[in-house]
Image 1 (cartoon, rainbow, N blue to C red):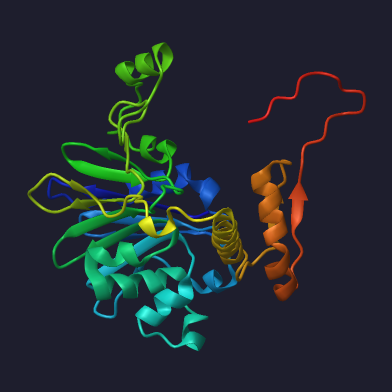
Image 2: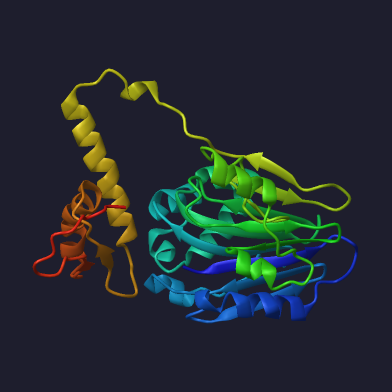
Length: 308
C-alpha cells in the first residue's frame, strides 16, 4: 500500500523541502518502490509507492493535467475500472494501460468534487488546484485507507499514519487526556475524527476535507450507507445469490492485474473460507496461484484457543 502525505502552509510561506523529506523518511516503510515529492508554492506533496498491480508500474506521481493547473497524488486501488472508464469515454485498450491515478485525474476534471461518488475501491486522494489555491483530501467510502491530519495556526499537515505527522516539529506529541480517560473508564465510542493524540485528527471514511485561502478547512460527507428497499422482504435464495455475487465481484477485483502472486490469511472462519472458494475461478482464468497462511497449534496443545 502506498502513502500520500503533505504540508500546506496557511501563513503565506512556501512549503519547505526539508519538511517533506522528514515526513518521507518517517514513512519509508511505505516506499518499497520509491518516493517522490513536489513543491507547489505553499503546498508540499509526496507519494511513497508500493506497487501491487502491473499497470501501476507505469504510474508516475504526483500527476498533473496537461495545463499544469491540477495536481493529484493518491494511495489507491480502484475496483470496477471498466464501468468508470466507460463513463469517462475511455477506450478499453487505453484503459488497460492507465494507472489508477490517471483515471482519478480524469474523473476529477470531469466531475469536480463529485468525482468521489463515481469511485469504488480503497483510496486516499490529495488534489491541488493551483488556480484556486485549493487543497482537496478524500478518503474512501469505508475508510479502508487511513488519513490523519494536524491543523495548526500556520499549516495543515496530512499523512497515512501518525509517525508521518510527528516528523514535523510543530505537531504535538502528547496524549489527549480526555480521550484516554474515556477509553479506559467506560464503553468507548470515539467521536468522528477523534484520535488518542492531542492535535491529531482522522478524516472519516466517506468524507472530504477542503482547504482554501482565507477560511478554515471544511469537512464534507460525500457518502453514507443507506438501505435499499429493493432488497427487503426477499426469500433466502435471493440473499444467498446476492451475497455470492457481490462478494465474488469484490474478490475478482482484488485479483485483477496483480504484479505479484496473491496471498491470504486463512483463519478457518466463514469469511476467509468464502473468499478462498470464490477466488478459485478468477485465479484459474489468470493462471495465478494463491498462497494461504494459517495458524496451527503445536502437537499436544490442550490450552485455550482465543479467536480475534
